[in-house]
Image (cartoon, rainbow, N blue to C red; front, side, top):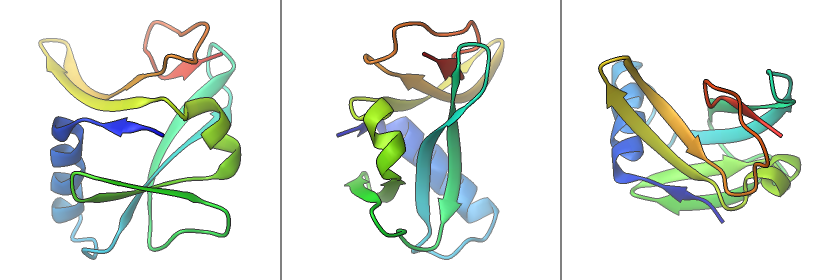
Length: 107
């Protein structure tokens, strides 16, 4: 389904610790309408899967994806990048036909 890099998993675990969220907190990845290219990626946290969620576990993280979003991000690589310009999560989506300059939206 999706791939999560070890560096992204480390950063998610750091955020969970810093925010003092329970150990069983899940990472929720998704897609919503909007952004410069039509669709935007979403990142959040959830206590448990919702009905119909796709559940993926990698690097000690439990990742949840709603069925509608799964259609758009089923081959996604979710990573984390640090550079002189900043740091943040990155999305490498081979299904995206077009992406905006910031990498946060696609079509």
